[in-house]
Every structure is written in C-alpha cells, then in structure tokens.
Image 1: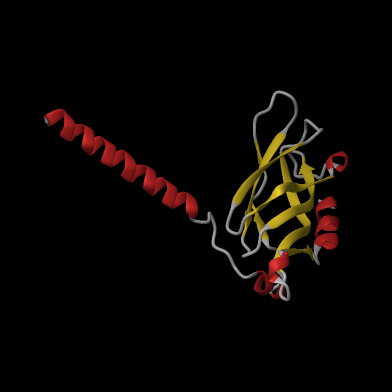
Image 2: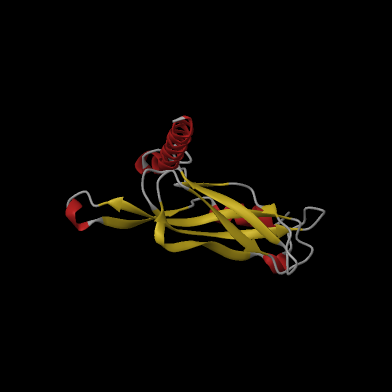
Amino acid sequence: MKHTTHALIAVWTAVTFIAACNKEAARPAVATTPIDQLIQAGKPPVETAPLTRGISPVMPTFTMSVANVSDMPVSLINGTVIFFDEQGKALADTIQDAGYTDLSPIAPGAKIELQIMSSNEKAVSGKYLLKDIIYEKTNPQFKEYGALPMKWKNPGYEAALKAEKAR
C-alpha cells in the first residue's frame, strides 16, 4: 500500500507538471496589438532584437529574434542586414538582404530566431533594417474564404539604410 501511495503521488505530480507546461506553451511569447492600430501608429507588425554574434568555425554567424506583435499571422519578413567592423564602420561588402519566409506563418505573439551569416571575418556586429512584411488579414467581406495577404512597407527604410551605410 505504501508503494502504491508513493506511485500515485509521483504520477499526480508528473501529470500536474505536464499540464502546467502545456498551459505555458499555449500563451503567446509576447503581447499582441491589433494590426490596424500598429499600422496607424507607423509601427511594424514585428519587433526585431539586436543581432548577437555567435561562434562558428566557418564564418561569423549572428542570431536575431523576431516577435510577431500583431494579432495577425506574419508569413514573410524582408530586410537588409549591415555588418560593422571593430571600429563601428559599415563593411560595404557585407550589406545583404535577409529575411524569413515559411509555409507556416509566425503566429500572433510568437517568437522565432533567425541565423544570419556574414562573409566577412571582420564583422563583429550588425544591424537589421526591416524593409517589408507580408501578413495575413482576415477577409472582411468573405470570412469563409480565409485570409488575404497584405503588405506593410517600412516608410523610413531608405533613410535608415543610407544612414547606416554612412557609419
């Protein structure tokens, strides 16, 4: 009887722990805002964290987390990454387009990580500039037909790119 009681307590604890883990997984990683409200405020549907350099035997590799802060799924992120040397000067040969696209969009409130490589060994830091984003918006007239792809363009992209290149 004593072993049965201990086994039941262990099973109950395990089931409670698993249920708690699933409960946490169902919550979004970040808070969301209605997409129309973000666009009216001039904000993008995603937030990007600064690039952090990792260790790679092949070439400099940087990691960036991207959070969908909108209430709509995001299916494409397009932007430009600029890498800098130790003095903070832009490395002209490393300016490249980089982004995300997948068959399964980034859910509202979800976070992903992107890996971006630089071909220049002198790259010690980098900056990612959002260019445009494709998100899925509910069809307002025919909800039964699913979502419509919509595009957000960064109005300050060209000016930001020019400023970063001049560093």
